[in-house]
Image (cartoon, rainbow, N blue to C red; front, side, top):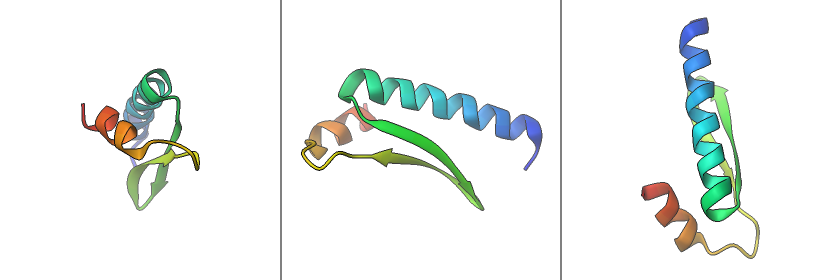
Length: 57
């Protein structure tokens, strides 16, 4: 992957991570394995509907 593209993806992932931490208090990270994905680490007792709403907003 081009260095510039990867840098941009990491910047986007940081914004997503910061937003999820601020709004619903969950961690996330960028996963680059062929495709790029955001991995959301959902605690066992988390309300997934609230997390999904925050992601969708």
